[in-house]
Length: 614
Image (cartoon, rainbow, N blue to C red; front, side, top):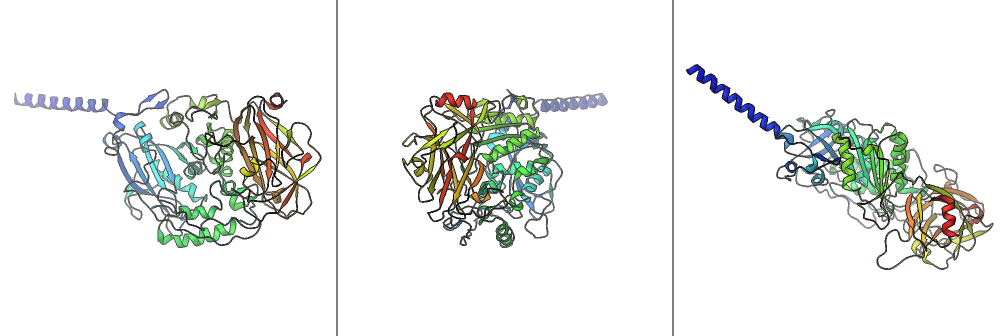
């Protein structure tokens, strides 16, 4: 009896444990999907009271601060508690940035003085120091956590080299800024070492990671996902860059011309270095000497603005051979800081490589992510592996129309619109007031403008008469006209001086003012160039006064519907108060009308344009 009782007792206990185990397995938390998107799961949505957060340092393969040891990147992780309590493995959304630990103050004199003659040297500028700020450990940033973690993702942040608590030096587009996020992804996939302390030896492993990583971010934080993707690192499945700077030459120069990003007159690559250099104070003097005061000063060349190998090495278009990640690109057509060419050139290359791709454009300025639903579908497809068909969608471009909600873009087969065709518009005389912009033959005549940077581009576009710009306009539009693509100009000119700025604005007239203006109301697009680089971006030559030169260059990409009743104006002037250097007034540019033209991408092409203007 005693043996039978014990046997039955053991059986009952074993059965109870088995039932409990089955119940626990039945209740195991997993992501939920509906309509191809990851849904908020209540069990993942407990907030920081239930989420697990910790930080660590990931060892890289480079030593950018020259201390003889491999740099380690500071990383923070926030994940659902179920990754511990249930052994749940989840994919990762990863954001990296040089901004998380703070930036330098806007100190007077920290920008380059733009009031100088072209080709001359600038006076020395002020170098501000960053006072590092850090969030309560273990956090580096709170961004994206509340959006993505409840949907079944782990959110990871890291500080870029030479910023925050990461080792190294900021190089502003240097190789270490690509290899740093690669190292973090390698750690998330079990291929690199992570440590509990910056100088410690106790290892940390990402046992909760599925090895599927997506990246996103805006501006510099959007550049770095692309930088990581160009390494071809395994495990980086998808990137969603928002307004990314994809070439530092394109950011600080335009067709050979020294040109500031909008809103930051006088900024250059060394200014951005100072702005983000929040790393260890004892490493800053060495980094400043080696990176800023030597490498950058020897190569950035604010005298000529020419392209060189150093600038080319900071262009991610030149590094896309190894890229395998799917791409959802996002940008604003009226972003005059990181201009829309940055996104389009990478989108175009990804398409040519056969990578999964879509692009989202809105009509506003810097920043602005795609609708959450779009991002969700891309992360769901490539990180959770749900076959939601996003990679098979016929429409590749999603463009917010001028008066629409940014959450409701209009789908198109592609960008530029496949129905757009370039038409050539020529110039007829009268540019001091308003000459003609026509499909007919241009007029054999020269017209002259006099540079004077005291007048803004807005002043010049509004002026009924000005000898400081030349303006050529279409007839009034009889109905709406849709521009889609990259306008181009070919300008033949002569100068009375060896150097000159050249600026072009495409405008919608009459110029609108007053309350209720939209960002699309006046400026369609713009572009800038150095006439001295008419042959090559790498080798300029002084202009011979009186000799004619032809300069061909692209304006910024656009997709805009110009309303009926407006006129499209091509405005040619010299120094742009908001963007270029500010030489003394007096340079004269003479434009040869019959050898100058605008190539404008119009949906419907030449026939559509004729119907709208005849």
